[in-house]
View 1 (cartoon, rainbow, N blue to C red):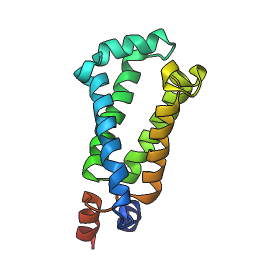
View 2: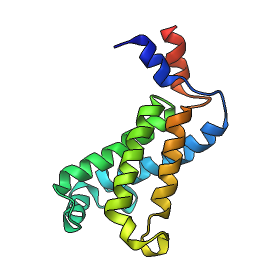
View 3: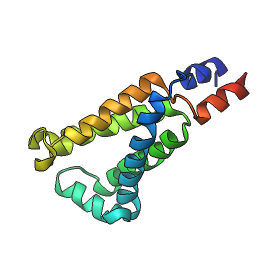
Length: 148
């Protein structure tokens, strides 16, 4: 793989503002992914989430639950530690677009009706991180230094 491409991918601004976005949204994504994958925090695990996805017309439900849960959990961890933040944020952005249009959009904006406002906020933060990179206190910065 081209080292200059990797350097561009992990280059970030030196702001703490990005860190203020990265950490809380990482915790949210990790928790939601853990609900889907492991049934933690009151979630239904892969089997239950897969059955629910099938019930709303998303098939194959189990595989999509695995895909969505893995994206949220593992990309959330990547955001938390600041490793490959741009690609992780891209994957999370795609995940949120799918969630908005397959689950929440028909319910309107507001969360009280299972609307898309929360997913939209997560999408906006993910897009912001995709453009800005990890910011301060991130493994991307360490990786960039080691690459020279």
